[in-house]
Length: 344
Image (tube, rainbow, N blue to C red; front, side, top):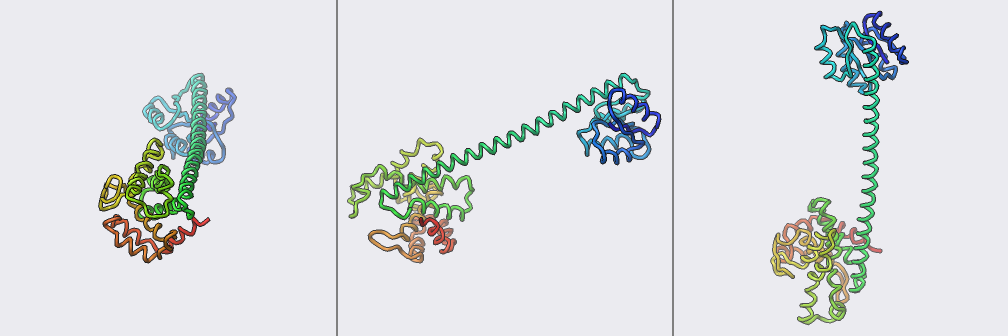
């Protein structure tokens, strides 16, 4: 410990007292010397007089509390300075003793202060250990959740691929429109926590076609009116398939609405304008764009310019005009690069 007092006699007495209790000590005759020694040696305790020339004991206490909070401080004061002792306690001193001090009382207060210091340090270590443990467990939990999320994503992508294969769609239509949807959604500055739901809705948009017979789904000729009635049921079938899956709750609503039109002439609910989910309105634009710019058995893919012109023509009827403007703001090369990145 470090003993600080401007009286040589007091320093010697205090040093003998603490030595009798088995403690090693250094001494300083003023606060300035004490501060220098604190930078050179690690101490468990500082015993300091309050009344000293230059920096006084209270100022030293403030320095120690600020720079070495792990050090226990006991202040020494005269009977007439009890107010200063109370101020010291409020500043961070562990205890105080008055001059002339009782040796037994001093010994007890030193042991008590060091015991309290030990508990404070142990508690601090425990808190640090607890915080570290929480951080580690949080990181482990985050990794586990990321793993689960990735597993969900891979499962959904596999399911969408299976649907594409069933429809003879060999160009990864579902994955492509989900990437296109994300591209336009990001251009709209949609928050990242909403993007995952929009991506899943786009990926699973046609899952309801699982409930449509192959005779209708794969029919090479034009569908009859009765067959179209059955085909138009696929958004509601998709909704029924997915509605019980909690993590797909938002995506499920998008699946139900992905065939709605901005002017209210779509299906199945004939929603219009902002009654339609933003994700479904975004999807409508990029789904049409993908359909026009992809080869079909009955025609070759349209050029980007032709597809662009058609989307502009359908602005306000099939598509949300604001989303059309946002679509047009994305350069052709970015759409091309996105499509190219998905080519196996």
